[in-house]
Every structure is written in structure tokens, then in C-alpha cells.
Image (cartoon, rainbow, N blue to C red; front, side, top):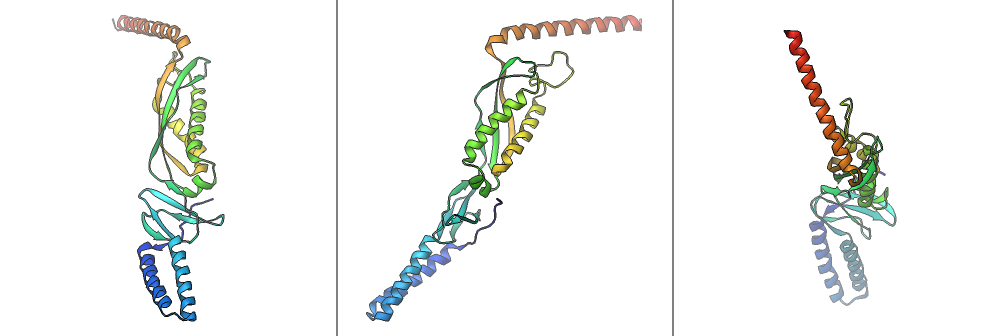
Length: 239
């Protein structure tokens, strides 16, 4: 389902029309004749219809208009409007929102348990999809964000000791871009646009943190010694 514009007119014009009809209804009742009383009743009914069609749209919000189960359209422009009478008009926020995921424990591609968390910045760009295509778009964003984060975390090692490929710690920009892309694919069905996704926490799980720290230190020592040897060999060759 795609968002479309709902029928609407300026609410102040409708308010003025209702005021004029109210004056006409009062005048009709004062005539005390059957025909004028019937006219007054009709005018009152029209006023009720107008009153039921008035709606207020706040800035950066949308009203999704449905009439007896049928989607009529959405009102995005903020202001005081008259639209389809006797219609349901739930509100959808178009403001930028963010979701901070819980700290998840997953295994990286090497099987090492790591703790990871992310923040996702998003906004609704299609109010019809957000209301009708998913049960609750905010819960949908939360669940899909954690699912995508788990999936991306299992594709890379926490650290690349061989310095030959991507890692979660060494390529945070690439990981964030991939997370954003996967989230957009998952959330497009809900009419949501992902503006940014960033890792906010990344660490080895506590049960292996000390062992992996020793491994990192050993790798750093080996790399430093290798640089020294390469430098010495280079100086010898130059001599």
C-alpha cells in the first residue's frame, strides 16, 4: 500500500460555514412553522457532519484517514483541516527518532563471543505502510534492528590479527554502512527510512576478554619485532 493525499479543505472555511448554518438553524426554529423546523433540523445535521470532519495536524505528523475500513489518504500538511466526515484519523509521527539496541551477545565469524550494541536513527516516510503493512512499526524497527545487528556481527571477526580483511573493530565505518543497508532493506516494508546506524558498544564477552587481550598484546609485539627486522634488513641492503 502506498501513501496518497487525502481530500481536505481549510478548516476555518468549514468553521465559518458551520457558524452560518447555525444562524440559519436558529432562525428556522424561531419561525415556528413545520417546514422551517424541518429545515432547522437539516441544518443542525449538516453542522454535525461538518464538526465530525474537522481535524488538527501537528507539525511533522500525519493523519491517516480511513472511512469504514477503506484507506482514503493521508494528511501531512500541518494545520486546521476539514476532511472526510465520520472517518478514523490515527496519527503517525514523521519526526526523526532513534532506537538504542540492547547489548547483545553474539559469536563473530571465528566463533568468539562478543558484546555489541548499536543506535539506529530513522523516520517514517510512508504513513500508509507504517499503519497498514506492519502491526506496530516502532516494535518492528526494534526487532529488525537487533536481528540485522546480529546478522552483521556474525559475518566478521572481532579483530583481524592477520591484517588481511575486514573486522568489527578495525572497519567500523564499513560495518556501519552494511548495517544501514541491511536495515533499510528490512524496514522499507514499514515505510521507514534509515538515516544512520552506528555501533555504540563493541567488546569481547567477559569470559574471554582477558585471553583475547593477551592475544592482542602478543600480536602487537610480533608486529613490532617484524618491523624492526624489516628495517634492519633494509639498512643492510642499502649499505
